[in-house]
Length: 376
Image 1 (cartoon, helix red, strand yellow):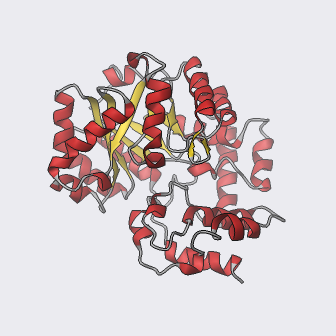
Image 2 (spheres, rainbow, N blue to C red):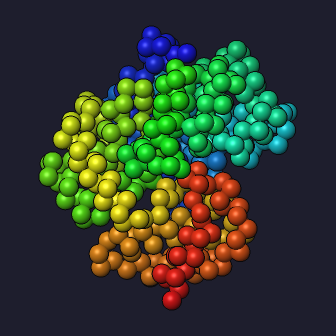
């Protein structure tokens, strides 16, 4: 169990981390000039936590970290978290091989935190069969990993099972935001309480739910605007940071403007007031009435789709057309997302997308709704 005097928590001077799954892109590559500006602003403000995974941006996230973080800052000045992802190893022998590839890709000789990635009933048996947890604990003994944890996408009872079977786990990354706090599928609150039960600090992903809690409909903005001029993202991220056991809130920033905004309210973080909590409850009730598709655009579903359907983009078109009055996304649907890729109606209902979706969405049925909206 990590207590307040642990080595890891002492290295987390602030509660805000840079998630590197949604880096700025330009012509299919990471926009390095923009990323440098973002990383510099982040570090200069006193933050030091970077998070990546081997599959992020098809491997380009790790390379960007090597070139524009590792090569520009002393290794001891920042914390780097990476993850062991199931699709990259098929056997026990391959676990160490992919770990070494990750070290080389990032240009480091150790990771501060190494997470068993996206754990749940769909892939946990594979990790157990390949002794992935045991190998991670060995890597810690060798000094190649400082702390071992897991990231989680499943029900609270399954998280309880994993932490019971592997009490050596030191920290847990969960999806947590005010829209998912009581959600029956994501179970943010319940997973948080399991972590409390086992004495594990929480790393928080998706605090703005893939941007949904930053790009708000007018009715929701009106509620927040009563409080002042702060951005919708500020309330979402501060909501997460207001829970004591959430020691790090990750934001997948995509441009300098987002980075500056997040830094502005997290540099000297203040927990939400009762008035702000009340406003969030109003916004939450409003968003639940609008019934948007709760896709976070992680894009895990895209790579394995045999019809090459850009599922998150089609869902985004649908949400924007439904939520924002007078907005039409027909042109985006026809030209940007389906001209060279599959339409929603092209789905053959193989279910590959649903088996990997962290949000447990009924994607096949939702694509039918998208087709009704845009393929009339």
